[in-house]
Image (tube, rainbow, N blue to C red; front, side, top):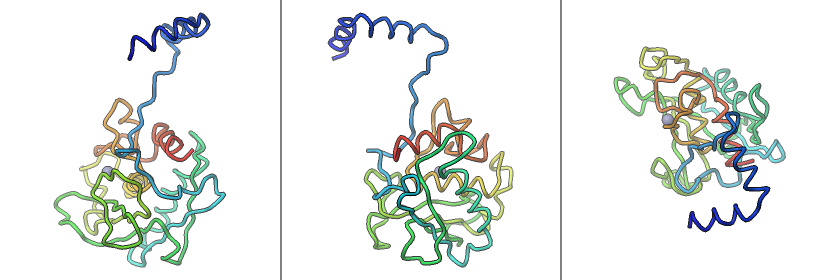
Length: 214
Ligand SMILES: [Zn+2]
Protein backbone atom coordinates (compact mmCIF):
# COMPACT_ATOMS: atom_id res chain seq x y z
CA UNK A 1 0.00 0.00 0.00
CA UNK A 2 2.69 2.43 0.99
CA UNK A 3 4.88 1.48 -1.97
CA UNK A 4 2.11 1.99 -4.44
CA UNK A 5 1.37 5.44 -3.10
CA UNK A 6 5.00 6.46 -3.27
CA UNK A 7 5.27 5.47 -6.91
CA UNK A 8 2.26 7.66 -7.66
CA UNK A 9 3.90 10.67 -6.07
CA UNK A 10 7.18 10.21 -7.88
CA UNK A 11 5.34 9.99 -11.18
CA UNK A 12 4.50 13.65 -10.71
CA UNK A 13 7.72 15.62 -10.81
CA UNK A 14 6.36 18.79 -9.26
CA UNK A 15 4.64 16.97 -6.46
CA UNK A 16 7.78 14.93 -5.75
CA UNK A 17 9.86 18.12 -5.60
CA UNK A 18 7.48 19.91 -3.26
CA UNK A 19 7.38 16.83 -1.08
CA UNK A 20 11.16 16.86 -0.87
CA UNK A 21 11.16 20.53 0.11
CA UNK A 22 8.55 19.87 2.74
CA UNK A 23 10.52 16.98 4.13
CA UNK A 24 13.80 18.81 4.43
CA UNK A 25 12.64 22.27 5.37
CA UNK A 26 13.05 22.94 9.07
CA UNK A 27 9.98 25.17 8.80
CA UNK A 28 7.66 22.52 7.46
CA UNK A 29 4.56 22.00 9.53
CA UNK A 30 4.41 18.53 11.00
CA UNK A 31 1.12 16.70 10.88
CA UNK A 32 -1.25 17.73 13.64
CA UNK A 33 -2.49 14.96 15.88
CA UNK A 34 -6.01 15.56 17.14
CA UNK A 35 -7.25 14.03 20.36
CA UNK A 36 -10.85 13.09 19.74
CA UNK A 37 -13.11 10.27 20.88
CA UNK A 38 -13.25 6.94 19.02
CA UNK A 39 -14.93 7.40 15.62
CA UNK A 40 -14.57 11.16 16.14
CA UNK A 41 -17.77 11.03 18.18
CA UNK A 42 -19.23 14.52 18.62
CA UNK A 43 -22.44 16.41 19.25
CA UNK A 44 -25.30 15.65 16.91
CA UNK A 45 -26.34 18.81 15.11
CA UNK A 46 -22.99 20.46 15.70
CA UNK A 47 -22.14 23.31 18.01
CA UNK A 48 -23.43 26.49 16.47
CA UNK A 49 -21.59 26.74 13.15
CA UNK A 50 -20.27 30.31 13.41
CA UNK A 51 -23.42 31.40 15.20
CA UNK A 52 -25.71 30.50 12.30
CA UNK A 53 -27.75 28.24 14.54
CA UNK A 54 -26.82 28.86 18.11
CA UNK A 55 -26.73 26.00 20.60
CA UNK A 56 -27.46 26.69 24.24
CA UNK A 57 -26.06 25.99 27.69
CA UNK A 58 -28.12 26.03 30.85
CA UNK A 59 -26.84 26.51 34.39
CA UNK A 60 -28.62 24.67 37.15
CA UNK A 61 -29.57 27.01 40.02
CA UNK A 62 -27.16 25.02 42.21
CA UNK A 63 -24.28 26.15 39.96
CA UNK A 64 -25.33 29.78 39.47
CA UNK A 65 -22.57 30.97 41.81
CA UNK A 66 -20.10 29.93 39.07
CA UNK A 67 -21.91 31.72 36.27
CA UNK A 68 -19.17 34.25 35.56
CA UNK A 69 -16.49 31.55 35.53
CA UNK A 70 -18.62 29.50 33.15
CA UNK A 71 -19.03 32.52 30.90
CA UNK A 72 -15.26 33.10 30.88
CA UNK A 73 -14.60 29.47 30.02
CA UNK A 74 -17.17 29.62 27.23
CA UNK A 75 -15.61 32.77 25.80
CA UNK A 76 -12.24 31.06 25.50
CA UNK A 77 -13.63 28.30 23.29
CA UNK A 78 -16.18 30.11 21.21
CA UNK A 79 -15.58 31.75 17.85
CA UNK A 80 -13.01 34.45 18.43
CA UNK A 81 -9.93 34.03 20.52
CA UNK A 82 -6.50 35.61 20.36
CA UNK A 83 -5.18 32.29 19.08
CA UNK A 84 -7.68 31.06 16.52
CA UNK A 85 -11.27 31.61 15.49
CA UNK A 86 -13.32 28.51 16.13
CA UNK A 87 -16.48 27.56 14.29
CA UNK A 88 -18.61 26.96 17.36
CA UNK A 89 -20.99 29.21 19.26
CA UNK A 90 -23.07 28.61 22.36
CA UNK A 91 -25.35 30.96 24.24
CA UNK A 92 -26.85 30.96 27.70
CA UNK A 93 -30.48 29.99 28.12
CA UNK A 94 -32.71 29.89 31.17
CA UNK A 95 -34.87 27.21 29.52
CA UNK A 96 -33.42 23.83 30.36
CA UNK A 97 -35.22 22.03 27.55
CA UNK A 98 -33.56 24.31 24.96
CA UNK A 99 -30.06 23.46 26.12
CA UNK A 100 -27.67 20.82 24.82
CA UNK A 101 -25.13 21.67 27.53
CA UNK A 102 -26.12 21.57 31.18
CA UNK A 103 -23.93 22.59 34.10
CA UNK A 104 -24.61 21.21 37.56
CA UNK A 105 -22.95 21.47 40.93
CA UNK A 106 -23.39 18.52 43.26
CA UNK A 107 -21.30 15.95 45.10
CA UNK A 108 -21.23 12.76 43.07
CA UNK A 109 -17.84 11.43 44.13
CA UNK A 110 -16.08 11.72 47.52
CA UNK A 111 -14.02 14.92 47.53
CA UNK A 112 -10.93 12.98 48.66
CA UNK A 113 -10.77 11.31 45.26
CA UNK A 114 -9.75 14.64 43.76
CA UNK A 115 -12.37 14.37 41.03
CA UNK A 116 -13.10 18.02 40.42
CA UNK A 117 -15.72 17.49 37.74
CA UNK A 118 -16.87 15.16 35.02
CA UNK A 119 -18.77 15.37 31.78
CA UNK A 120 -21.58 12.99 30.94
CA UNK A 121 -22.74 12.47 27.39
CA UNK A 122 -26.19 11.23 26.36
CA UNK A 123 -27.38 9.45 23.23
CA UNK A 124 -30.90 10.88 23.25
CA UNK A 125 -33.12 13.04 25.41
CA UNK A 126 -33.46 10.35 28.07
CA UNK A 127 -31.35 10.59 31.20
CA UNK A 128 -30.99 6.81 30.93
CA UNK A 129 -29.16 7.06 27.62
CA UNK A 130 -25.83 8.05 29.15
CA UNK A 131 -22.92 6.77 27.08
CA UNK A 132 -19.80 5.17 28.51
CA UNK A 133 -16.83 7.54 28.56
CA UNK A 134 -15.12 8.01 26.22
CA UNK A 135 -18.05 7.65 23.82
CA UNK A 136 -17.64 5.98 20.45
CA UNK A 137 -20.81 7.35 18.91
CA UNK A 138 -22.31 10.78 18.44
CA UNK A 139 -24.31 12.17 21.32
CA UNK A 140 -27.23 14.55 21.70
CA UNK A 141 -26.42 16.52 24.82
CA UNK A 142 -23.84 16.87 27.56
CA UNK A 143 -23.98 17.44 31.27
CA UNK A 144 -21.01 19.00 33.07
CA UNK A 145 -20.98 17.99 36.72
CA UNK A 146 -18.94 20.13 39.13
CA UNK A 147 -18.14 17.89 42.07
CA UNK A 148 -19.11 19.79 45.21
CA UNK A 149 -16.33 20.24 47.75
CA UNK A 150 -13.71 18.75 45.44
CA UNK A 151 -14.48 21.45 42.89
CA UNK A 152 -14.33 24.12 45.58
CA UNK A 153 -10.88 22.80 46.48
CA UNK A 154 -9.76 23.01 42.87
CA UNK A 155 -7.02 25.41 43.84
CA UNK A 156 -5.29 22.63 45.76
CA UNK A 157 -1.84 21.43 44.68
CA UNK A 158 -3.45 18.54 42.83
CA UNK A 159 -3.39 20.65 39.72
CA UNK A 160 -0.63 23.10 39.09
CA UNK A 161 -2.52 25.83 37.38
CA UNK A 162 -5.60 25.24 38.86
CA UNK A 163 -8.37 27.61 38.71
CA UNK A 164 -11.94 26.49 38.79
CA UNK A 165 -12.31 28.16 35.44
CA UNK A 166 -9.69 25.79 34.04
CA UNK A 167 -11.71 22.84 35.30
CA UNK A 168 -14.83 24.18 33.60
CA UNK A 169 -12.90 24.85 30.41
CA UNK A 170 -11.54 21.28 30.41
CA UNK A 171 -15.04 19.89 30.84
CA UNK A 172 -16.41 22.08 28.05
CA UNK A 173 -13.73 20.48 25.88
CA UNK A 174 -15.08 17.03 26.72
CA UNK A 175 -18.64 18.21 26.08
CA UNK A 176 -17.60 19.45 22.63
CA UNK A 177 -15.92 16.15 21.71
CA UNK A 178 -12.31 16.43 22.81
CA UNK A 179 -10.56 13.51 24.47
CA UNK A 180 -7.56 13.75 26.77
CA UNK A 181 -4.44 14.99 25.02
CA UNK A 182 -1.76 12.39 25.65
CA UNK A 183 0.75 13.58 23.08
CA UNK A 184 3.57 16.01 22.54
CA UNK A 185 1.11 18.93 22.49
CA UNK A 186 -0.30 18.04 25.92
CA UNK A 187 1.62 20.70 27.81
CA UNK A 188 -0.06 23.45 25.82
CA UNK A 189 -3.48 21.79 25.95
CA UNK A 190 -6.28 22.25 28.46
CA UNK A 191 -7.20 18.65 27.58
CA UNK A 192 -4.15 17.22 29.32
CA UNK A 193 -5.63 14.70 31.76
CA UNK A 194 -4.19 16.39 34.86
CA UNK A 195 -1.34 18.60 36.06
CA UNK A 196 -2.12 21.28 33.52
CA UNK A 197 0.47 23.73 32.32
CA UNK A 198 -2.16 26.02 30.83
CA UNK A 199 -5.50 27.14 32.18
CA UNK A 200 -7.38 27.80 28.97
CA UNK A 201 -7.69 26.12 25.56
CA UNK A 202 -4.47 26.08 23.60
CA UNK A 203 -4.02 26.20 19.84
CA UNK A 204 -4.25 22.42 19.52
CA UNK A 205 -7.56 22.43 21.39
CA UNK A 206 -9.06 25.12 19.17
CA UNK A 207 -7.75 23.38 16.05
CA UNK A 208 -9.45 20.19 17.21
CA UNK A 209 -12.76 22.07 17.46
CA UNK A 210 -12.43 23.15 13.85
CA UNK A 211 -11.35 19.66 12.83
CA UNK A 212 -14.58 18.28 14.30
CA UNK A 213 -16.99 21.10 13.41
CA UNK A 214 -15.24 23.44 10.97
ZN1 LIG B 1 -10.85 15.11 31.52
